[in-house]
Length: 112
Length: 112
Length: 399
Image (cartoon, rainbow over all chains, first blue to last red):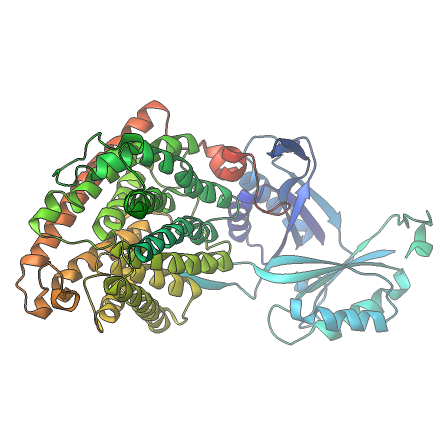
């Protein structure tokens, strides 16, 4: 099993969610985060004083999937989150040793 | 060392925290997240127009533990977060290569 | 006695000014979190530009000389000949009416939310005020529509129907938003905005008596009752139809009731405001769904609440007007022994305002679209108008 983590632009969340649903994903965890990357931030001016806002709002998605589903899910996120502009985000995949569904206690493949 | 990540129902957070304290856990990181899973969302009606709220509020717990403590911690979360209803959440375990305590520079199990 | 009247008109003017930030919060809370500051700014801009425009030319063109049928003249440009004689009542009235001029274009902002270029809005507001608001105001107050016998106590036709139909014309030129509508980002903001609007509306309606007298007291009472009845009607329908009485339903009903009682406030009495509120609450609760049927993107329901509510209230005067109660020189409604003549005149007055406002607003929007453009870029729309148009964000961190 793998944990897929993706950082995407907030307004793309609905598209990504729909793409993941269509790809058969059963569960996603989403959190609102801020990112600092090549996109850079922006400046806001209040009463003539400039504030550099380095961190840009982003959404983080976490999805645990079976090994054989990794490519499909990554492709779905990639296609749905892409705008072609700097700041579209990143996807990374890490290994998961164990997974448990709290309600039933099921482990492994059954708990995905 | 392992990173244990758990997604639980928000109102269960206090129970889980107490159970983890009782199990000897020294530190937890908690964040407010939203989840999309089998529990499904709900709809809200504003001026007669229905909006489907797919994402349900959840709490994410992250804790790094010694390999020997993994089973006990999972058991504690499983027992305290369980309501028997759909949407109780998931726990997953991933390997951690390195761990550093920022203040002292301690590494490995000493930094837990 | 005169000083009492002036005191009430001045206080009412301040109450009406407070309605614009109230409206801004009402709309801003309903909007999405990345566009809330743009919504507030569209409203606050109206109280920056309109007071100056009003004093320069607006008041004169919409009021003096009072007997002109279609448009006023140049006699009072820059308050020429307005003095403080008679304890300053004429000056107090200029200020009071200026507040109405300011909030009227602000009403339209709710329809164009989430996609209109602020530069286009900045030009639209004064141009619309001069070409649409000023003449219609003149027709209704002292002009040909008033001479025919139609009545509008505090601005049902001149303000709500006028701005409501303009909102429809504006969104027809502007087009739909790129992304699907979202639920309100802050219902508490909507509710505080509603409270401010209701509070300010006592000045709007009871102040329109232009005196501290019985008509003012009855208009105050009507404002109290119609809003309550309409809010109640709206949440009851929701409860039965959708399963829950919602905060937005209560807020929308209150505003619909306030809009509907506005034209009638000084002409109806007894239980009539309750009936007017109930009828407006029910009709507007269904009218806000028309946009889904007809496919126009009136983001925050300016048409469904202000146009429909204003029209309903104005036409109901034809049934509920009670001149003997006020010892007033206006026609009786059908329920008070009158013929259908008043109802017909109300229909003609609203018809004239609707045609003028729709055609001119459509023309102004097309002219803006062909010159400076009316829509923000797709990128700005996706990333939020707060940052793109104003360089500010309402909530730092997560959006």
